[in-house]
Length: 627
Image (cartoon, rainbow, N blue to C red; front, side, top):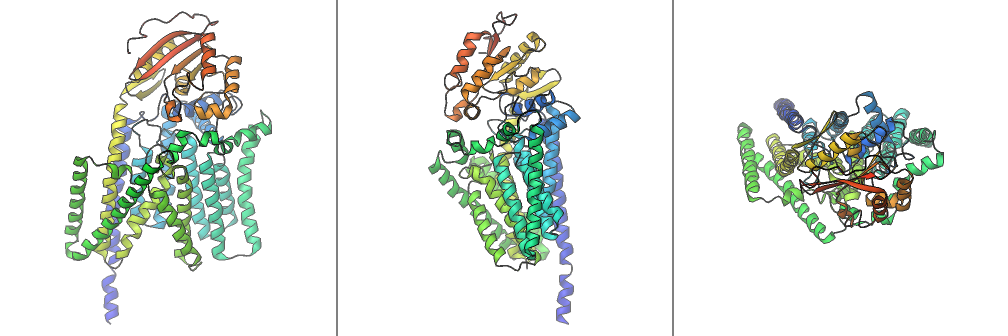
């Protein structure tokens, strides 16, 4: 009789838990909608850069639509998937910057759908919704203090955003295979792996490895016969080879198959080229260039993350003190303490906790992978819990492989805005789901731990959001060209002058080269580069060969050459024209006349016109006005 009474008393708990989660999910959903409204209404068009990588992401699809062949006519160091996909979408809609950015927002939304499905399966809807909000703030709408090309809206490389989407589709398919290990799902996993091979090395390795491991662990659960193993892995391999082979066949229509294969695999040779991976830039990316300082940051990050875990447990203990009748007083007390902490940190200007928060994540993820693998091999294979452990392990492995590129410098900055995204979902699962589960027998304590964890993460993320807003707000000057409008900071004055000069003096079928990079000017002025080499930064110069590049410029010299100031110093060289680009600089001095020189806010432009082209007189007016 007493047992029956206890069951009767315990029955309302799921309803109360549902109500609590429902209100929090509703609040977080409103926050997501407001985030979209705020950034798109205030800052749409301000992501990207006019002189760095994002212009290439527009130029290459534009040239593909003009009939040029990727790799043969337009040099490219990554796989062929993203340029052709962007070309297809721009052809369907409109060839403009705004169109590509809207498409990228749709890709981010599609990615968030698969991420929400995955995280909600591994935890619950509340954790999934909160992690999606963080993803939008830290990866979709982000802007670093240097540039705004490390966001989903205007990525430095679409291979990373398309690849992340492919990766989470493959994780979703692994989950489907765990529920129903069918041949069709194995084949679809192979298609994802094949598509990933056409993006970037880190994406290809992560998707292929995790798909294969996930498929193997899923089959081990049911322990089928050898024939099933052979059949499913054969279908997986067939799917991967089908996509890769189809891409190779299409590229081989207008060039030799060997040249197409060599171009498609160039990115892997770059990974193995010590001249490139040993460059100071990539050593900074990985964190090995300043290892002592980064190890210090990793230790500090470990302390910060341990502190977050302690606060979550402390909030759970506070929840135990309060009775169920005073639970709202408990939540108010926790939020008040969080607000006090946030105010103190804001006024004290101590932001290292926010900057170094994620430095230890690669090592935490490594520990998570080992821990989960041990659980999987010692757990009942057929249980539902084992399915989730396998899926959690695959998500951890996927996160770890991506983090290898920024192993000692894992921050939501630069490449980290993309590479840390899977680890962010993993972090939310452990902090807001598994840690509060330690109080599963006390409803108020568990809710208090959840609220405390969300509040702590919000406090840490807030300075990063502030930095994004300041960076986007600084992009207040517009650059107009035909029907295109882009935003930049004070350097837009010099950029606008260059665009205006080219628009006024260009003639039909003329060409333009922007050195060492700046393909956005080609797209804005609709002047193509007559050579395949649109980016002459040190990695591309080393990969394609300086002699080959100079020979291409001598064979088909552009009518106009714009030399712009770019931060090549991050690659360990002082200047393009005074260092590795001297042969091309000599060619320009011999064959071209300087017609305009402009500088604004540290951004300088020198415009040259070919001597045998008509109208080589110096363009007068405002060459030194903005110095």
